[in-house]
Image 1 (tube, rainbow, N blue to C red):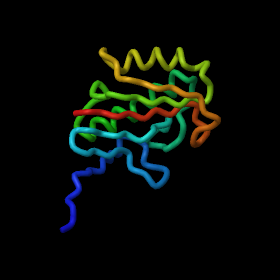
Image 2: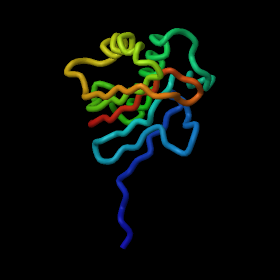
Image 3: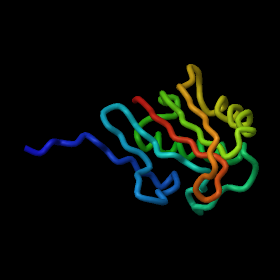
Image 4: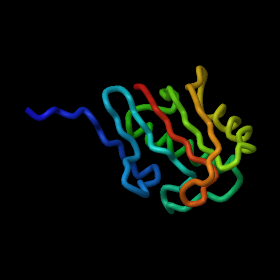
Length: 130
């Protein structure tokens, strides 16, 4: 007897379309895993212009769009993983994160990486519980 999957694929035109073999998000039960988002404008699929603050705001907009498509918001986040090409940008990212999320804040990790897709300076992924 084949097992029934309760895995739902989350997709929305309000966030950048996947640029590889992955889904924007996956929902299993009340948990949603949102794929790493870079600061792509979903309409042009180009990186937004501006500083790390502008890039971070676009990343959070993309994450919010996928969260909404899954039936939640970023206030449902329990874990945020941030990748930066320069940890010197961490303070600016923290400032945007504080504007985008409400207390109590989710758990978080932040690492510096050598490079990100399309030359982005930031990528953020999120895990939500609804």
